[in-house]
Length: 531
Image (cartoon, rainbow, N blue to C red):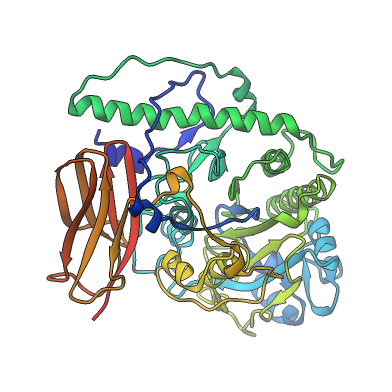
């Protein structure tokens, strides 16, 4: 397998019974060029917890538009929640929550929860796989991307990852997903930016391994690279075990282990945050929201059944997590966000369920959210048909943009680069960002820039300046869909600084990435071609 293919699709997995210690990754020696190319790094202790609700959550039975009740009764009488059981929200008589969501109701009423109404994207696809891809990559409906919005953010902040990591300034995983597979949302420009934890108990069963020398051949270099990636797993498992040992969950609201899968995941996240990990993003999942049938248990009331149980688990997990963070003194550092790939249709079906729809509400939770309703209740037609959908009010990418700017404190330029285009922001977070004060030019070991181009943006041509450690250097121009546009160079270079000119000839205006691979190091930087 090619090194470039392997690292693109590989993440460290903290469940292996034994791991191989790879060779130490060599850092480039200091030079005047490295001093000029030091990355602008946003030093923040803010953490984002992403809660993915797989299957397409029925937003109309989650955040209930009370003022639309008569029309809802016409459209979905066989699944509609009794209006007397809807949970009231402080400050509004028009909107309420599903009866199972008492914990999240309390968070809202205490100023810790924001509801973004009718989030979605234009031209909804209605396919689980395609719509999920759009949400996690932040792509347009007619665009396919191989990297995720969160992964692109981490790539911008930590451009050399995984080479040289962990290091003094970033000793911990950049992102952690609870589960066996890393989401495309955490896929960076050239490789996965996350590791997975499927069972933290396995950390204590890990043992150290050894490696034999690799031959001085092309295959040997590929083997050394794969071993280097595998070594990250062992290194990160060590720091994660250390973090877990430093903190103990304190909330009494956590359910018994095994009773709530989402709570089990978020309990791990809370412990690791409190244990001191510098990890920026955690990703957790709750499945089962594809409720085409038996969404409710009509025998016992429409506030019971599959959907009610799922929302109860969601509310219980988030409420316990927030309580734990408060008791562990981490609550001010944490922002949470829920999302699902789409909502459900306005009209229910004959199987006491709902079919794939369009926009749906999402939640943000944390001490720093601007609690309240963002947007208005969906308008429900008096005589809705099976094809009627909740209209989108907010492009979901405006939520991501708001998080990048107001939580992770990215500049407008860096945010637009991560999001691949410019989006408006929403008033969601009590931001304390001061980008001029937070942005620091620091030498981060592996964070040193080894490639750049100038001018950037460029019109007719741009000069690519890079440092080789010796040996083969591959530099490629890649578009935002991950497709190769041009191989700029693929040959051996002596150790040191080199320059190559890239002409605009045959290259359309737009955002691209310059990817460089040299021995064990990979780095990708954004470049803009203009007319």
